[in-house]
Amino acid sequence: MEPHPSRQRLVETLHQILRQKAGFANEGMPLIVDNSLGVNPQSVAAALREQGLNARSVKEIFDDKDPRDPAIRSLAERIGGRVIAVDKGATPGEGFSRSAIRIPGQVRTEASVIRLVEEALQ
Image (cartoon, rainbow, N blue to C red):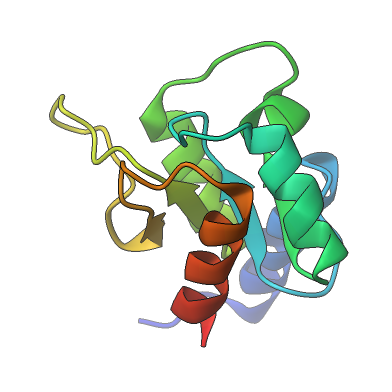
């Protein structure tokens, strides 16, 4: 059964508001840079924005709070975004599943992270 059109519009509007509240631009896929990277996530997010991508770090989105993986994954799913991360989540229910752009743990440079993200998005 299809959702009622007005309900669907309401859900889409709420997701758009959530996207804006998280600091993402209206255009482009939202990219959430997780704290698990071996390089500074705020710096990576800024560099991705300089490349024209719609990126924000977890700290930029959640301020100084450090949410668990399920909260980050939920946000990504609701706003149609992806999470740039190293970890898979060792605890059941954690990790980012299909929303992840996985970066190998040995990657330690901003340029390498950006290259891998750009490749993943092609």
